[in-house]
Image (cartoon, rainbow, N blue to C red; front, side, top):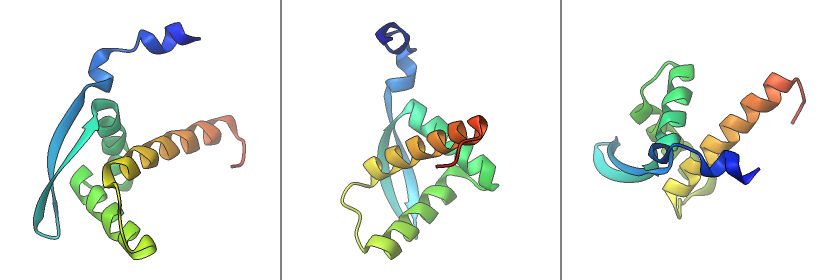
Length: 95
């Protein structure tokens, strides 16, 4: 099993920082390339840009929780939940 994971292309887990504008404020977010790719796929599914999707997530998590301790971690978990939901839907199993 481990062989599948250790043979992943290092580009996928290389981190990259991007500057995102949230309500006119520029902020830098550092995520692995695979996470950026997943966010881009999510944004495409929603018909918006990655930056617009990230801004929407920021607004909604603030509205729901009132605070964001670690927004980058929130985005990572969001990506994993998105991929998991797609897998479950493809298998035809309810969450």
